[in-house]
Length: 244
Image (cartoon, rainbow, N blue to C red; front, side, top):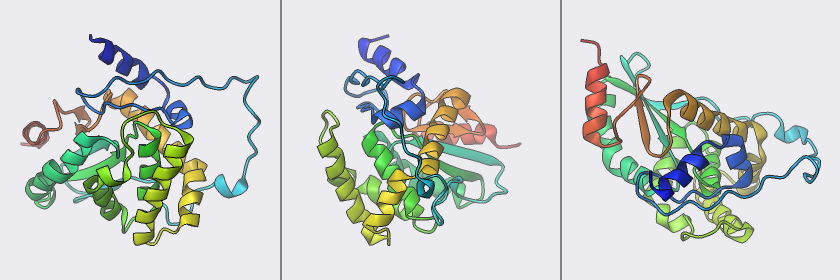
């Protein structure tokens, strides 16, 4: 195991809720990426300021889905789940190059139900995932595809995550939201919404514990992690899982 792989394995063992709270930056999204920085120190019980519970943020926002977002027939014999991070270039490539082939060959032909689940690897990806959710069921995949296609336009250059860089990224994301009827006030409400952030964190924990996901994009076919996210490997996993 290389030094980079050792650091990455340490990062992915952290609870998802802590990653979301810290805004931890993880540069690598697959096997080839920059070294992950050391995680920031979490506040202790002695140093943490008491959080005031805001009733407005303690319940889901109407119109913002927390359930699975999927394409394909609910009666399909095979279920495929993709775990992806909005800031992962490999995920953007998968969405633009591999997914259309899977849609053509397996989704549109009724062979699979395809579920997309967020696995944000840094705070920018958290903010982007929240915007996609905040856009609602009808626009979910439209916003998802647009952010992946224009990833380099809204995502900051590699480097330490700061309050300034995160605010600047949220401003760029908010501009995308305006295109799909998500005004700045609604986006901010979504960024502050506890059920939505808990949903992302819980899905990440489940992915690691149940499917052994430790990077993105990761593709699970009928409960089994595919060898890779390449079209060939995913297609083969689908064929293996299809009832004879």
